Image 1: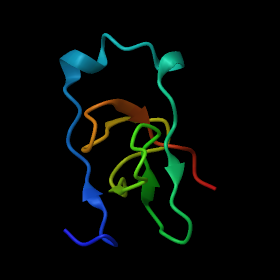
Image 2: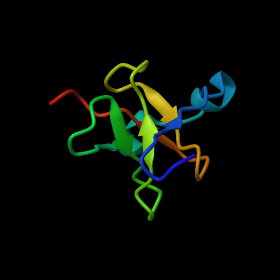
Image 3: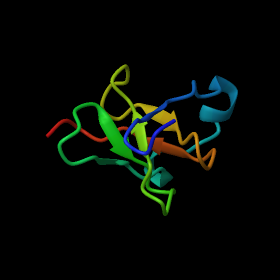
Image 4: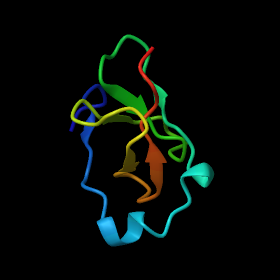
Amino acid sequence: MSATSAATEPALNAAHAKDLNPADIPYATWAPGKRGVVKSPFDPSGRLIDVRDFNAGQLSQCPYTGKVFRVPPLK
């Protein structure tokens, strides 16, 4: 994968998701100039994640750290 391509977001395990408190799950941030692509709040490298198939507020999993985040609202 090149540095400019975004990772494909893995499906979140439904059994794991039900145990999470949404208030404790941080939002990702939109990547500047990249529609449908975010930066995980957990990846210090700031690698990109493709969330085009997700809705705002939906739980998603960082492919780099395995931690769960929420897709941010549209700008």
